[in-house]
Image 1 (cartoon, one colour):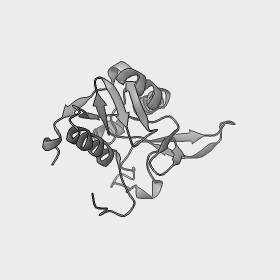
Image 2 (tube, rainbow, N blue to C red):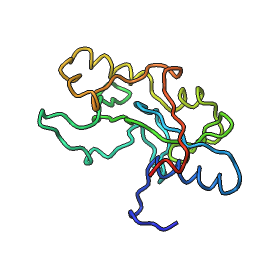
Image 3 (cartoon, rainbow, N blue to C red):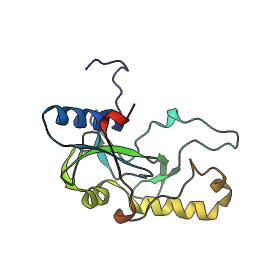
Length: 168
């Protein structure tokens, strides 16, 4: 593999790498994709970044209505003070083998069941907070791609499996 984008990787890269290399070894690992995914609990992301916010706020663009292109909620400290705005994953990719998740991007996660993985990684309380915000701001629902309701329990999170050759 050759590095072509500096030191930046994402969940798609990581899930594809785990899937491809597993398949090369004869292991029937699957590329899995969940959309929407939502807010994450504090974890260690690739590069040893401990965070509950998967994106750098400088990445955000503002649309013509003055809204950022990704859902944002307040991130508060232990005293209830807003420290900054927090963003969510619109979607997320990871690998699955025999019903167990392997996520090289966050954690890493090595062998949790899907429901345990979702309960461990996704901040469902933050997802609920976002959904309440949407309920009180119905004009945001005019932008369904960026302002969609998020799942509130592990059993609601969708997963789609792809053949690695279908990802081009």
